[in-house]
Image (cartoon, rainbow, N blue to C red; front, side):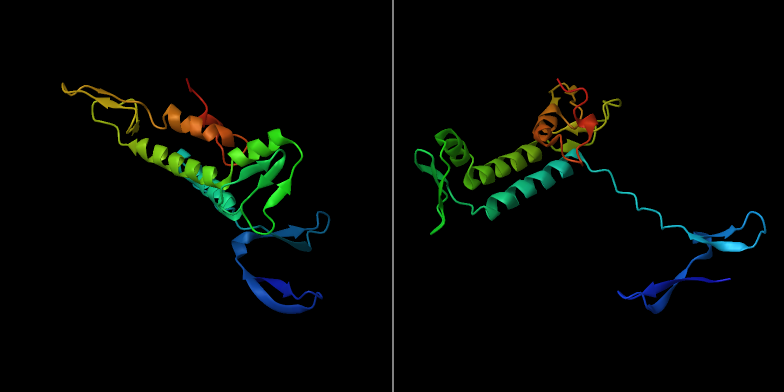
Length: 188
């Protein structure tokens, strides 16, 4: 037996049939008569999403911050006078905010600063790359390239990856849906 789903247009008129695999259909029978009462179509399984590494998570957040800074104009913002912010855009770049504390704070966190912070965070992530564990460190797993140490006598002090530096970089994003609580576990 073959099964098909009726495809309909916006007005509800049938416009075609889509085949459905027999294993995705359950026949529902009337409990009293045993006759077919209908069919239940099982949705396709939800694809599993690969676990995101801490590095991938951080780079995605940095890309979002960078895009927001560029969308905000990428300019240096200054406090033009008490409570007035100048975003460097003509003619709509001057905003009277009224409170000079807020204006100073916004000006100090302008797009240029955010872009510089994004660059610095990427460099930190590069320094703290994950390296395969050295042969003499069987219990550690991958180690941090920056935090681990090798000595002339061949002794290695491995710091497990992700290191605290990367975990700390992720803390501002703790409320993001992709943040994994285990990234905060065991932090000093």
